[in-house]
Length: 152
Image (cartoon, rainbow, N blue to C red; front, side):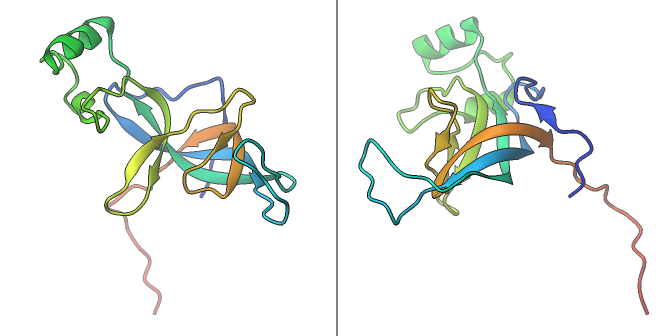
């Protein structure tokens, strides 16, 4: 994995509406300390370590016109990006969300919104702790087809 330039958290990925892009995300990760008791409202964490995770950036925010039509008729205008209609919740409402998402579970899994709390921490999902996003970089896919050197 070679990343040439990390982007600041304030610099958001620019992808077409209705699309999603995988990114590398540098985080300050705090593992939950299971040796100390915690309650529903408080937990103890081990000292932070910097790590790199893979998250996806989703651009599925609706325009006012799209949101109004979706609320009235349950569908988007024909002029909307086709993949934008993929982003509904289990109640059939459109997510109307742009931000980080993570895949939870296997084949029967789902995407989870990765939204920081008031202190900037993200917890839950597949992680046994919490983290703050420090920077991000787009996932750079190698070109293919490519020539391969064959060893003899």
